[in-house]
Image (cartoon, rainbow, N blue to C red; front, side, top):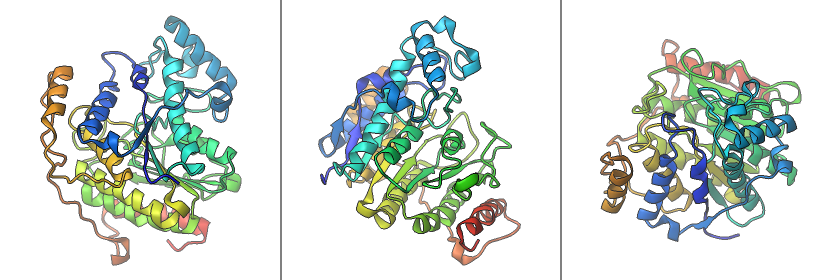
Length: 390
């Protein structure tokens, strides 16, 4: 196995562009790759471009009629069929939509194939993590569900246990739906409570169905949750479940929209806490997965200058075993690039100046605390189904 991590990147992924007024501005991808290069990380990882996902791969998750509808809308955006979630405010149709979406999916599938075949232990596709797309429809800025496709490809290659951990502020509903009855896949999502945020799913009582009962895990966090609560929730649920499940591959989704500056949600998490969870996912892969096989994806994130590039550059650095010190001064060349592209002043350091701390669940819980109530609801709903004490 190569000692170098993989970074999946093709400049053409920035063609995933819903238009100038849409919050998912592809400049966030360009700026992230620019910051990766500014820190020289492209010299310590293998940068690779995979082929776009073909129809046979897309059909591992998506219905044939839906793929056909995406192709049609891609060729003529004015003909987009709204019954498939296309041509909506969230998912406007645009020329080349199928090609750009399939290319992003191809990078995540390529990352999964590479780690499974022993070409690298870790692989990152920060353009991916489009976790809301359903088998038969677009949703929440997501056309093809690259995360689910990567997992489905791992199963096709022979994996028997794949764990998916999603820390985006929004529930990972599409991935959960695809594997709802599949005992080979454990999906864990930490997200803002469905009472206050799209997609209004991800209640703790959603635990999987049929043979997959106990395979869906949802931690619904109160609006306003900050670093300490977010980290406490993660560490009170995820490590125990991974220790029990012992996945052969860990797939993680790192939407940066938990941040307190994100305009579309209501958590209050810092960049430093995001970095701490990225590092924890890396460590958990090494602790509970043979060979440390880890596929890390991006996701949401709409503070496209101040937050997303820094968060995902930290992710690449952690995967490369070259972590960036939070107090590191960001290279002036990148800040010049930010100003040239956006007419905004970029951040000066790789930190929000926070020191992430949390209290472990083993120290006890406060039944009157809303965060602890959320964690306990999840543990009580899922842990007994897996033969574990809540």
